[in-house]
Image 1 (cartoon, rainbow, N blue to C red):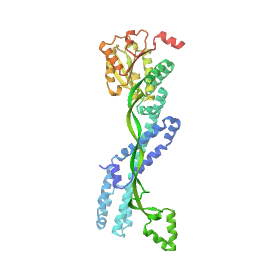
Image 2 (cartoon, helix red, strand yellow):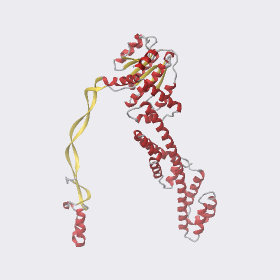
Image 3 (cartoon, one colour):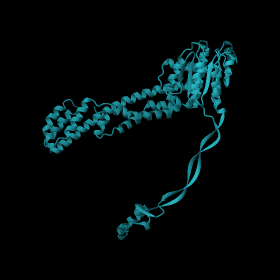
Image 4 (cartoon, rainbow, N blue to C red):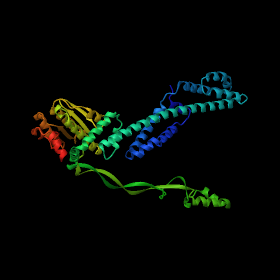
Length: 479
C-alpha cells in the first residue's frame, strides 16, 4: 500500500510547502492569537509546542495510506506512461473503461475526442499531463483535509493545555511558568481542579506552612563546600592563517580591481573606445578578472582551556524527598496541612528546577514524583489519596537511605511530616542516617502534633512545629 508521501514523491509534488503553510496558518489563527494575548507568560512555551507539533504534522499526514481507488488509478497512470504513442491510441477504449469510476473520466473522454486528429505523440503527452494534474489536485485536496483535521485536533489540545496550565499556575504561582507547561500535558477532571484550588486556599489561610517551605528551600544555599571545579583559562598560541595579502601561491581567478594581478584578456577591453567605458565600470565595481593569490602567515590566537581550580562553591540544590505519615492519627486536619505543605514545596521545586518526590508511609511506602513527565497527574493522585493505617518510620527511612546512595539523590533533602507518635528507629538505621549526613545530606522534620515523641526528633538537622490540634489552630487564627 502506498502512503501519501510516497505518492507525492513519485508525482514530484512538494507537499512540504503545504504543511508549512498549514502550520503558519495555525500560528496566526484567532484561537492561538487570543491565547497569547490573554496569557503572555506562556507565549514562548506555546510557540515551542507549536514548533514541535509542526515537525510531527508532516509525519502524521504523510504516512496516511492513499485510498485504494486513487492508488489503483496511479498504477494505471504509470502503466500508460510506458506505452508507445501508437499503442496508446489502440489502448484508449480500454483506458476509458478502466477510468469508469474515476473523477477524471469525463475530462478524459472529452480530451481524447478533441485530440482525434492530433499527432499521436503529442496526443499521448497532453493526455498524461492533464491526467497527472488531476491526480495531484485530488492528492492536494486529500492532504488539505487531513491537515485540517490535524489542525483542529491541535487547537483543541492546545486549548485544554492552556486551561490546565492556567489552573496550575493559579495554584502554585511559580516565578517561571515553563515547567508548568510541561506538567499541563496531563488530563485533569473537574474534581481534580477543584482539589488543587482547595489546597491552594488552605495554604493561603495558613502562611506558616509556606514560610516553613521557604526556609527549607533556602537551606541548601546557606551551606558551602570547598570543591574542585572546571574553569576556563585563556592561553595564547601561534596559528597559521590563510591571507589574500600574501602572494605565495596562485589558487585561481576571482573578481577584483587589482591592476597588478589583471588577466591579459581583460586589457583587450582598452583596445576599443566602445569597450573602454565597460573596463572602467567593471574596475569601479570590482568585477575585473584577477589572478587570485594566497599565502600563510603566523598570528597569535587566544584559546580557552579548561583547568581544575579550587575555591568556594555553593552546594548544589538537590531533590526534595518528602516523607508523609499516612497513619490514621494523621487523618483530618493534619492530612490537609501535609498536602498543602507539599503544594508549597512543589512551588519552590518548580521555580528552582529541583526534583520533588513524595513518599507516603504507614506500614508500606508509596512514591509520587511530582516534577516528572507525569508530575501533575501524580500530584492529583497524591492529593486524592486518604490517610489511614499505622505508623512505621523504619521502612520510610530505609527507602530514603537507599535513594540517597544513588548519584541522582546524593544532595537530596529529606523532609518527614508526621505526628511522630511512633516507635523509635532501630539503632542500625540511626547509624546509617548519621553516616549519610556527614556527606552533606539533610534530614528535616515537621511535627504536626504537640504529642510527638522528643526522642524521635533528635535524629533530624532541623525541626519545625505546626500544631494541627484545636488549640494550635485557634492560636494561629487569633494571632
